[in-house]
Length: 400
Ligand code: GDP
Ligand code: MN
Image: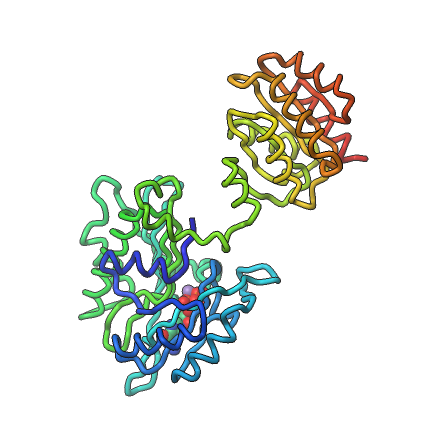
C-alpha cells in the first residue's frame, strides 16, 4: 500500500527522523490557515506548496511551488487543488489533486547564495540476497533511474544482516561515503539509523527519501518521502491502515477487494477467472502461449458460487480490451458441477452484459457432470477438460 508524502513524513517523524515540516490542506482557505500555523511554529517566511498524489516527479509537472507570502499560498493552492497533475510518472490524463501539503521552506539561502546539498537515500529489500539494504547517492533531487543509467558508480548500497540490524559503523560509512563531516556527519548517521528503524518498525517494503537535504546550517532532513507499506502486515498497524487513500488506487481493484476477490489489473485481452494463485499463474502462461495476453490476474478463491462468479465476470468485463474470458477452475474442495451451475446462472442473469466468448475448463471432482451441464444449457459457453484443449480454444476465439 502506497502512502502520500505527508503520511510517510508522519511515520518518519514518529521514529525521530528529521523532516521538512508541513500541514496538509484540502482547500485554499485551509491552506492559508495551515501556512499561518506553520509560520508560528517554525518561523518560516516562505512556503512550499506540494501536491499530494501517488506519483513522483511532481516538481517537473508543476506540483511543487514556492509561495513567498500568504496571498501566494492562497492563489497557488486554489489552482493546485482540483487540478489533474501530469508528471513523468503519471498517465497523460494525470492524477487529480485532492490535497496539498503546505511545507516550510528549508532551502534557505546562506551568504554565498543558495546551493543546497541534496542526497538520495532509500531502504528496500534486495530480492537477490533476501536482505534489506540502504541505497544511497550524492546525486539527490534527480530521477534515480537516470542516475542509475548514466552514472551507476555514484549509487552505493549497504546490505543489512537481518540478525544484527543496521550497525553503527554502517551508518557512519554511509555518512562518510556521502562526503559529510562535522555536524552534518553526525546528523546523517542519526538520520540513517532512525530511517532504518522506521522502515523495520512500520513493516514497510520501501522507504525512498529523495531528496535528503543538508541545510545551510548542516541539518539533515527528509524533504520528500515515498513509502510503501507491506499490506500483509497492516493488521498490526491499525493506524497506518487508515492512511489508505482509495482515490489513488485502481477503481476495479478496489471493487474486487471489497468483494473478497484477489484481482490485479493487467494490459492484455483475455480475462481470467481461476481458483488458486498457482493455477492463476499457470493460466496466464497458457494464455500467452495461445497468442493472447492476460487482461488480469483473478483468484476467486474456494467458493466459486453463482453470486461470486457473476461479480467476477462483471469486474473482468469493466476492462474494455477483453476479447475472451477463460474460466479455469480446479474442483478440489468445491465441486465442478456447482461451479458450472454458477457459470450458467451468472450467464443467465447477465444476459447481454456478457458479450464475449467464454471458455470454461473445469477439472477435478464431478468434472464430467460439469461439462455436461454446460453443454446441456444451450448457452454459447465453450467447454474444455484439458489444459491444452482450453489453450487451443482461446487461440481459436482470438483468431476469429
Ligand atoms: P517530487 O518532484 O515529486 O520528487 O517532489 P519533491 O518533494 O522531491 O520536490 C521536488 C523538488 O522541489 C525538490 O527536489 C527540491 O528541489 C524542491 N523543493 C522541495 N522543498 C523545497 C523547499 O523548501 N525550498 C525550495 N526552494 N525548493 C524545494
Ligand atoms: Mn522527490
